Length: 122
Image 1 (cartoon, rainbow, N blue to C red):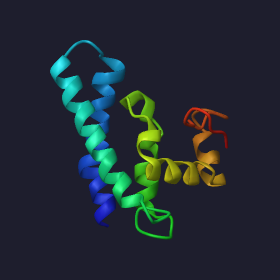
Image 2 (cartoon, rainbow, N blue to C red):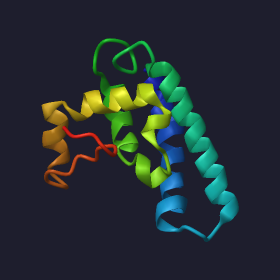
Image 3 (cartoon, rainbow, N blue to C red):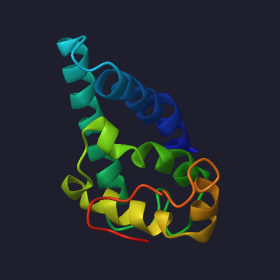
Image 4 (cartoon, one colour):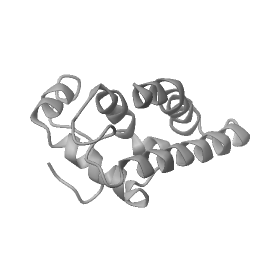
């Protein structure tokens, strides 16, 4: 439950604010943009460290913690994050993106549009 709570208390809220300032309101508050950009990258570092040497957030099995966290990472470009800077997050992201249930779920709002990092395909 620790990683689900981390997503709900830190990762999700911070990335939501980063999305607000960096994607939808750029140039309105340099201080806010920089603050949320830095914190977003710090949190991606925490996530990367956790994912190294394991397939999923809690080990070998896909859990609700992965389900809750993955959609935020799917918008990494809007958060000015290059997943190549976080190789363990990249591997985890691709592993989940290739799941048929994730592809089916993602296609509900945007058919055939699972966001993939540059150079990668499903």
